[in-house]
Amino acid sequence: MDPIIQAMGGIMGITGDPRVGPIKVGSPISDLVAPLLATIGILGALLIRQKTGEGQKVEISMLDGIIFSLIPRQSYYFIKRKSLLLMGNQHYQIAPCNAYRAKDGGYVMLIVHTQKHWLNFCESLGRTDLAADPRFKTNAERLKNSSELNRLLEDLFQEKNQKEWVENLAGKGVMIAPVYNFEQLFQDPQVLHDGMVVEIDHPEAGKVKILQTPIILSETPLRIKRPPPLLGEHTEEILLEAGYTQEEIRQLQGIGAVKGI
Image (tube, rainbow, N blue to C red; front, side, top):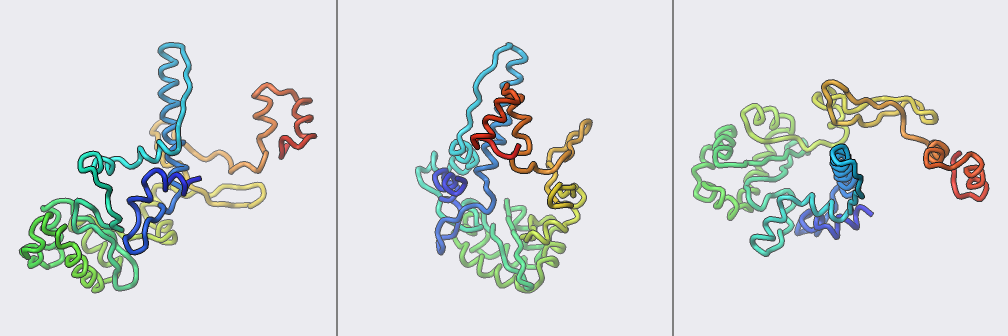
């Protein structure tokens, strides 16, 4: 359902490039946002139950969840009554903001939030002439002349490799990052330091790597206690908790209503 929800929820309508049209987000974001919001709703309902003793129904729509994830982009439409155009990696309010290809074929993502950042960026490049150029002097002018600015920066970023640009500019306060593929991502020192990848034993696959929870609790740290379940591994346990007897469960199994027991 995720691509359908992305399409209906407006995410695809603001993601993509005018040359190729709308593009869905690479991860199944609709499938992730809804349960995260559901968790918040459940916790809120539990807190109220502690105070009042009353329970309540918690409902989450995948469509509503993905619409909520548009924040703050929806404000543009509410104020201007216009839809955002497809802009690729560019920003409708800020320039420059784009992904640029480096000499080695890798990409870097750059965003220059304020005039202060623009001046620092130009100085870090050794290109103070750009800061003085009337076409790029203010953010409004840079947005107006973004095509010219992007062509100039595309040529400039061809002068060094991805890693060289990031190490050189990030150390000078420029908001720049490498566009990682998975191989780079899971070898990054920060990712390794945070322990986002853990190895566990799986009853059929042996040693497997999975992602750790990103939630860090100082007093009760979270950890992965067991591997993803096999198909139907917990069917009997869940049905017993739901009030079914062993005999009823066997009857359900006999008619093929449940699997994996």
